[in-house]
Amino acid sequence: MCETCGCNITPGNAHLARRKNDQSQDAVTVLKNLLSANDQQAAHNRQHFDRHGVLALNLMSSPGAGKTVLLEATIAELKNEFRIAVIEGDLETENDAARIRAQGVPAVQITTGTACHLDAHMVHGALHHINLPDVDILFIENVGNLVCPASFDLGQHRNVTLLSVTEGDDKPAKYPVMFRAADLVLLTKTDLLPVLDDFDPARAERCVRDLANPGPVLRLSAKKRDGLAAWFGWLRAERAAQRERARRGQILRPAIQPDGARFHAQDAPLLRFHSTAL
Amino acid sequence: MHELSVCQALIGQVVNVAREHQATAVKTVNVRIGPLSGVEPDLLAQAFPLAAAGTVAEAAQLVIESLPIRVHCDKCGAETAAVANRLVCGTCGDWHTRLVSGDEMLLASVELAK
Image 1 (tube, chains in turn red, orange):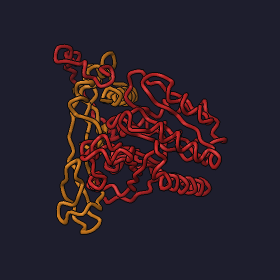
Image 2: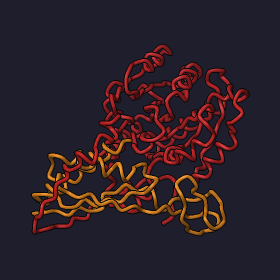
Image 3: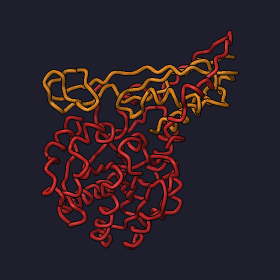
Image 4: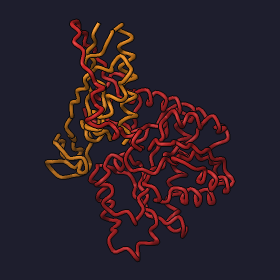
């Protein structure tokens, strides 16, 4: 993790930053998002998806919140209705991709090594192993992490953030960047609620609203196959909407996109679906 | 946690700007960061020398301007300050707001030496 987060840079080795005393200077205004290279790649990925009418969903959560078991339950229910493919992101192992393949759908595993998130270039590399014309819904299971994945556009259309009831109902308040980015929040493992006296689903939802996030908050247990109908309904509606957008040549970007950045950036993407005040 | 990745992307842009302007060195890199960008300014500052080492920007100073969180209320129309995990209207308290500032991570400008 240290190579990733930069915490191995100490006051002792920070002297790498030497100053020079050049006389002539030239100030250049740039005003670009720091991740504009990633954003360009993400836009390219989105074009791939839209060309083939694929709905791409980015699943994010802390490790162990139940992303893979949710996908297993979803594939079991919908694999005869939709052609599904999965990109799995983990630091190590092919375990999750193997679980998905056992469900009879194609899965590509990205092992990130030390990186704590997927980025658009990694996803593009994985797309070379997926035949998009044969896909209706592509799930991208991000690295389990409530911090970093929220900052990287992958080219997806929607962000789905899972919060398991064992984690605490104030997680949205503690990780606002992640939960502000969610187009849909899934409260998972709700079968455990009867034995947990400190998780209030209503409080979790209030924390999401405090982030000015109007997205649905659904409750389910993938393991017990409980509450899944609303999730399947959301998927069907999103899939139908994506087909319609693809037909009209429209582009949908997820809520993750920094609004403020686009107000100030010269390379602001032109197409946005949620209105913002200037 | 991902600040080194962000910093490497930042240096990539800075190097391109320096090359376009045939600069021999980069003096200053000015960025603007909002609290809701997911980037921690302190970690970005720590990662910067490592990402810049060996590039035309290795002697550059990173200047980080922190931007405030402000929201516009859809209900009452007020524009008010807010904190990261409570983006409700400061006037009427409603949560139907839109962020107008606070999630930026922008390379604003660079000062080059020729």
